[in-house]
Length: 128
Image (cartoon, rainbow, N blue to C red; front, side):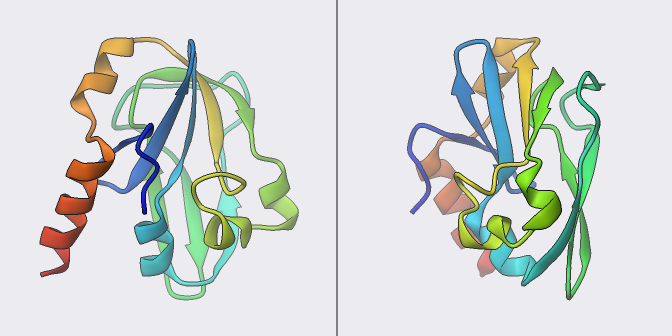
């Protein structure tokens, strides 16, 4: 269900590493919990964040949820498609619904994140 090459956080973000860069989004579980997403607020290119910092919000018909940086990095790109089509986060959360792309500052932080199997177990435990 969750891409095996990604890393995951307990706040339900995912990280797809691409060399010195990473794409970041929210998981399928997170988008299901939020419901229909109507607006996404993202940072500007060039913004820098530490792991754990809030970098944006995802607004649904039910709630507004903060999105947190899984790793330290500098934003190099935002998914501009989400301005016109925020529902991409619902439809394709693990690919077209990505939020930001960052230059990784500290690759060792990736070791702190869960793999897909651990994340699936975490979601199952959390749902009990």
